[in-house]
Image 1 (cartoon, rainbow, N blue to C red):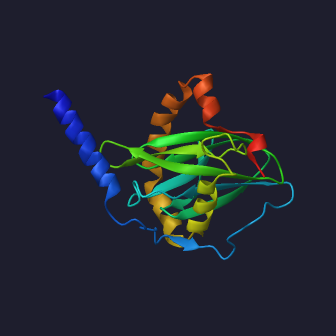
Image 2 (tube, rainbow, N blue to C red):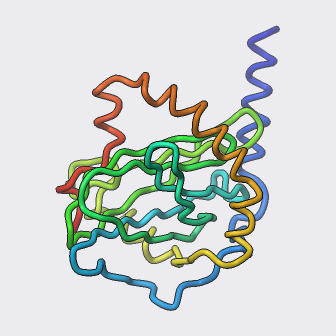
Length: 205
């Protein structure tokens, strides 16, 4: 009986992720005038993109985390992407939806890096993970694949507008609570698990 109930809950969760508007772009974000930016001198560029029907009606928001500080980078809907310039070196990024999840990064100046925002079933809504897109044709998610070319073609770069910034300020307490809760789980991951979820310097182009 318990197995049947769990199966029903999982089915309903998957059904919820699969229905709804496939292109529910957040009206809080604005289309960027520059769709193919290059990193400024001495900087690296990190691009976060989403292109999946599963969970497409659910919004995800992206942050750069340094200690207790979280910098809002934008809301990423299905078929959109955002880009952020960072200093070379180590960084931690976070995605928020029903959950929070993280990505470690080591980046070099003059390079552009790509991260896939990947949906997975949650209790009632979509959860998301940040997956590094490798500069290695043998990797599951890589810059040389037909999938990557398709993702770039089908996504539009967007940037924060006034409504998005207002949303962040209104929801910052909830975002902080999720960051604190899920960072504890993140810190419990093994070295091998963290390595799979780390964007390496040589992943840039």
